[in-house]
Every structure is written in structure tokens, then in C-alpha cells.
Image (cartoon, rainbow, N blue to C red; front, side, top):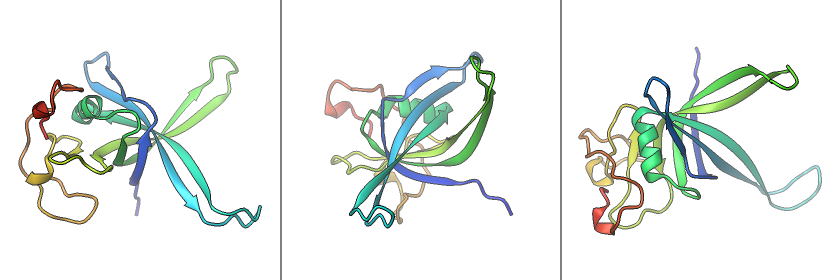
Length: 163
């Protein structure tokens, strides 16, 4: 049996970097900070400590557009995806380098939602409103009906928000 599945909740350390590949495929690169509170460090004898891990996330196609349009630095998000290992040779030293990152398959807001907002996005789906999804446990299940395409970031008024 093999399994490559990652579930993370963390805060964006910067706005997603959005671009199109040479073939025109949308891609967004993000980084999230994932915290873990340790109640007691046995080695040092110190009290509660936070342990922070920074994780690079890559979103493709509609997830990239969703990330670009709706996610901003500091936003708490839930990411479901798979691990990917990249290998390359350092140009300066010639040393072999390795990096593990996450390819997003689902991105969802995880911070408290303002009234009338919320949503989730899976690879290959349109943005889904909370009201269109059946009730379920965390993380939210995908909706069956597609919502309109995402609006640009920073709409002029709250009435313009699509969710």
C-alpha cells in the first residue's frame, strides 16, 4: 500500500506568487507557517514552546487563480495535497540539492469567516460557497453545484464579494 496525502493548517507568510507557465498554465506558489505548541521540553526543562515549520505550497490551474484572487498574507488556510520532491544541482557549488514541497489539491479558508463569506476550492472545481455545501465535519465537503468564477482581489465594496 502507498499513500501520499498531506493535511495542513497554517498562515500565509506572504501573498501568493501567481504566474503562467510558458505553455499558459496558471501556477501560484505560497508558503505557510504551521505552528505546534509543545507543553514541556524534556531536554531543556523549559515550559510551553512553539515549534514552527515553513512549508512551500504549489497550486495549479483554478486553485492557482483562487489563491491569487482571494488569499493574502496572514490568512489562515487549510491545505490538502500531496508531497513532491524536487532535485537539482546548485549552480555555484555543484552540490546536489533536494527540497520537499506540497502540491495543493484543495485549499480552504480556515480563519473565522466574516458573515456571508467562506468557501473551499478543490483542483478542477469552481469556488464553492458555504451555503451550497451540505453540513459536514471539518474539513468541509465539496459542493455539488459550481459557483461563479472568482472576482478580482480587493473588490471595491463588500457587496461585490462573490461569497
